[in-house]
Amino acid sequence: MIIVLFGKPGAGKGTQAPLLAKQLNVPTLATGDVLRAARRAGTPLGREAQSYMDRGALVPDSVILGILKEELSQRQYANGVILDGAVRTVPQAEGLRTMLGTLGRKVDAVLALDIDNEEIVRRLSSRTVCEQCQTPYTGREPESLCEKCGGTLIRRKDDEPEAIRTRLQVYDAETAPVLEWYRRAGDKVVIVGALGTVDEVTKRAQRALER
Ligand code: AP5
Image (cartoon, rainbow, N blue to C red):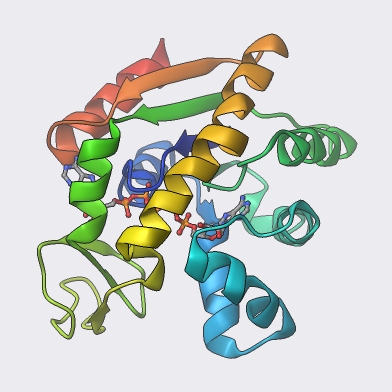
């Protein structure tokens, strides 16, 4: 099963992806995590992505499609994947469709987490993430330790107020139209409210995918 997990920055994609992946027994692939790992490793990809990411802009489509092509050819994704934030422009959706088509595969569902901007700002301005395993936390101070792996929690540069504003503008201009693109293409698009506890949102998402 191939699921495109979709939603505004801070909607809860990174929180929900591993939980849904466990239920569906498929791995996750988050382009944001791939890019941050490349930055930490100091690779040319990481250096190219850095300036876009820190100011809240999108990394060029060619870079994202290159990542998807390389990753999705790996055996671990043979039985499916949850693509977390991996499709953010119409050209990316088109490129992914072509790429999967050559492998005889297709997106099974687009799962969009729905949330208002006020809640996004509240979540992102109080978020820290584990430097090692990327687990997000709310209301935990930087330098605290991750419950899952013991790594150090940090504040992301793109969670500064100016970058959050840019990310929301970029979402409206470039990412929101992707949902309509999938609808018009006849793909299954499900929209799930992202307010409530993490567990409530997971259950809502599971039910929506089963329908
Ligand atoms: P990425 O890391 O994917 O950032 P994002 O999409 O902006 O999403 P976030 O990680 O900020 O939020 P999320 O929806 O995962 O929410 P989370 O679960 O963390 O990408 C970073 C950058 O990389 C992009 O800006 C771009 O530059 C580049 N990039 C990546 N992919 C790209 C692509 N395809 N094309 C072009 N560029 C790309 O939750 C947020 C907070 O809320 C956390 O603190 C969490 O604990 C909390 N929370 C979660 N659920 C709940 C809940 N139910 N109740 C209360 N709090 C909750």
